[in-house]
Amino acid sequence: MLDKIKNCFKKDKVLYSFHAKEEMRNEEFGLISDKEICEAIMSGEVIESYQQNEPYPSCLIYGKTGKGRPLHIVCAYSETEGLTVIITAYQPDESIWLDYRRRKK
Image (cartoon, rainbow, N blue to C red; front, side, top):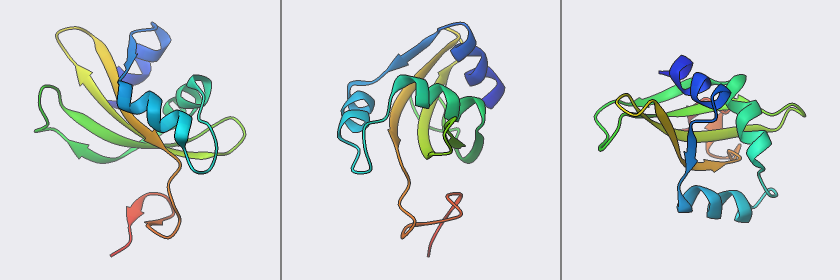
């Protein structure tokens, strides 16, 4: 799924949900730009997969921006439309995440 999501970014076939844009504007560690989202996706890895999500399968991607800022981005991918939807994006909190990849128990 990650390769398909990256391909959507290359082809400008990405939509941001209202929730994602709100989260990006109000991020407690500072505004997240569309450019940072793209950079993090391109350097990213899937750390959680939600294949049963409706209406489209989705995943949580961990990646870093060009300046090394860690980001988590939840993306859904529509196979029929060849489109990625950004559901939410945030800078992960180290008190909740180990190496930004695994949730602390």
